[in-house]
Each structure stands twice: as structure tokens, then as C-alpha cells.
Image (tube, rainbow, N blue to C red):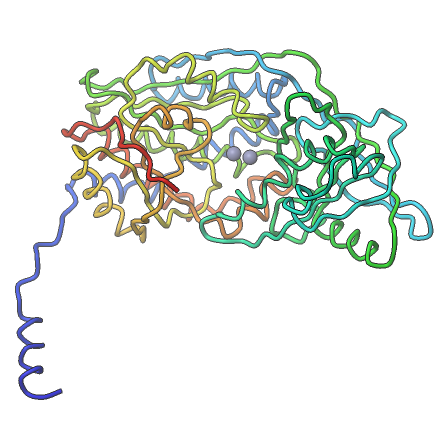
Amino acid sequence: MNKRTLLAAIAAFALPLPALAQTAPDVAALREAALEDDLAWEITEGLTTEIGQRLAATEAEARARDWSVKKLTALGFQNVRIEPFTMPVWERGDEEAHVLGASAQKLTIAALGNSGSTGSRGVEGDVVYFASFADLQAAPAGSLKGKIAFISHAMTATQDGSQYGPSGAARRLGPSLAASKGAVATLIRSIGTDHHRNPHTGGTTWAQGVKPTAAAALSLPDAEQLQRLLKRGPVRLKLVVTSEMKGQGRSGNVIAEVPGSDPAAGIVLIACHLDSWDLGTGAIDDASGCGIVTAAAKRVADAGQPRRTIRLLWAGAEEPGVFGGAAYFAAHKSEYHALASESDFGADRIWRVEMRLPESAKAVGDRLVTALTPLGIAKGSGEPDGGADVGAVIRAGTAVVALGQSGLRYFDLHHTPDDTLDKVDPAQLRQNVAAWTTMLAIVANAPETIGPAPAPARR
Ligand code: ZN
Ligand code: ZN
């Protein structure tokens, strides 16, 4: 470096720095206090201990709604109520998979939500292997007649959980597609990243006109076992899956509010889902989500009446097909939602914030990023995913802030018997509550107009 460029470099450093953006002292104080929060844990512990699993439209989910009403009322929320709706009820039944022949052995499976039944006598069939959902798509019509389809996929753990979308197609759409090509049943490699002998359940959907067949997930070790057997030669399986639909049943959303001082400023809708799958106790999916959003709302409410109404939605029946989110939207679509967001990705720390805000609220977004920085949270540039239960509200044009949680271990536990309270890390949970508290304190009190949001960027 010559003398001139050296001087220029020194001069550049000597230039006055732009004033660092500051977070309002009241918001910063709420953020710091939330780092000591115990309420999110208390709610998560209470729901998972006193109710346990909360399969949609069951007696357990109904007890969970009553528990929630009591809890939210005791915490001082207003307009606490259940908004009931009806939905198709699915029951798990028995689930067994046996390899037949010289390598006869049992494999570990769990039926997928909305699975059909083999009947109690089961079905037998030769296994046809597909390395991916795309390979199944390429299979000719009728080519699976009398066969058992086995769909694998590649999935690794990532911080943003972005592999769930593409890998999850095997579960969400695979069984219906295989059945439409003649398969008598479908097995999938669990949509997960652990190597425990725990299958991951989850919902599957049936296309119009396709008769539901048995559909189940193999644990990852069992999926790999089946692949090794297939490398040695043809494999014939016997499956017994007695899942069935039991007609229409009752579920419901639990709603609670912190009424705002300015009804014209719109509602800030924050959601979680109350139901869970039935294998674990639904601690990370999604009792902790309810704990997080509620602890944040309580702390902001205790600091003084917010400008905007904060509405908590503890949605029913998210897992089998977002029935609660649909019922909420049908009942409330005419109301002015200024912003919507959901916590439904475990209890680990927040690492990223993404948002879609109107131009009028640009400064709100800037304040948010500044206030979240001390928690180690960076601004992302992607399209925010607000969560399934607020999806319809967001698609209708509501602004959204998405607080992205670390997904590094989420899919080790997701929808398995291992989704239990001991997997919740209290320290990460507190950081998460602090991020939600900061976000709520800013958006609920912002003097700017928030929403409707600009159209999403094209993907
Ligand atoms: Zn969930
Ligand atoms: Zn789930």
C-alpha cells in the first residue's frame, strides 16, 4: 500500500459513523426481562403433563381446550373462548409390518394420519422401491397393481428446515399417488433426520376419487434395513394397518385477547396449535409454540394496554389438515388483521427474522431488526413463512413477521414418540420468548399503519 492509499484508508475510518439505531428503552427492558421467562415452560409442562397427547377431534383434544380456557383466563386474558368446528375423525388402530420368507422379521412402522385400513387380516404384496417421490411420479399407470410401494427420499437437518417441503412430498402425496397406480399399500421412509427406531407419523392426503389404502412410515433404521433386503432380492411384506375414519367429530379453536386501545389499528394475530400427534406428548409440536406466543403476549399486556388488540389463536386440528386454521379464517376473514405470525417449529432458539410489511411499516421492520440483534437474530431475505394456522389470513394479504427457529434437531423429534417435554431446552426457549416479546411489543404498539401486505415476491 502506498502512502496515498494508506492515508485514504485512515481517512475512511475517521469518517463519522452513522448514528447506531437504538431500541426504545421500554422494548429493550421487556426483551431482557423475557430472557428470565418461566411462563412458556409452565404452559408447555402443564399441557404435556396434565393432558399428554392431543390427537385432533378426540376426547384428549377436548380436555386440552378446557385446560387452555382455564389457563388463559387465569393469566388475565380477555374474551377467552372456544370456537368449535366439526371435522373428519381419524383413528390409528393397529400397525404391523412383517417381512415374509427366508429373512422373516418385523419392521417398525407408524400409520400416517388419514391412512386407510388393510382390514384386520392385513395385505401381502411384493415391495416396489422408489428412491424419491419423483421416481414414483415417473412410474407408469397401473404398474403397482397388487404391490406395496416403498418411497424413500433424501433429507438432512438444516437450520431453516427447508428440506421438509421437498422430502415431505413422499408422505403428503406419495400414498395417494401410489394407490392411483394400483398399490395396495404404501410405506415411506420417515420424514426425519434421527436414527432412532422411531417412525415419524404425519398427515397424508388423498386425491379426489382415490380410495384410501394403508399408508405408514418406517423408522429410518427400518427403511435402511428394507433397502438392504431389497438389494439382496425381491421382498414380500405383510402389512396390518387398521386405521380408519370415524365420521365427523368435534374440534375447536381456543381464542384469547389483549384488547387494544385503538380498534382501527387492526389485530395482531399470533398462533400455535393445540393438537398433536398421538405418539409423543406434543411438547415441541406444538405445546411449546403455545407457551412461547402466550408468554410474549402476557409480558406485553402486563406492561400496559397495547395500541393493537393482540389475539392468541391456539388452533385445533392442525396436524390432520389445518382444520382449525380454516375454521378461524372462515369465521374472522372480515376483520382487519394488521399482522399475523405463528410459532410452530419447536422450542429452540430464533436465529432469523423475515417479514413482509407494507411500505408504510418499513420503519417498524427496521426497529424490529435492531431490537432483535442483541438476541443473535439476523434479518433474512426470503419470503416469510407465517405458519399453517395463519396461512389463510396471510394469503388474504395480511402482513407477516416470521421468527425463524433453529431446525437443526427439530426433525429428529418431529411427530415421533420422542416429542416429549425433556427435549425442550429451557435456555433456548427463553431466548425464543424474548424474541417474540420484542416483536409483539414493537408491532402491537407501532404508530405506523401495518398491513395489508404487498403481494409476495414470485418464487
Ligand atoms: Zn406443528
Ligand atoms: Zn406437526
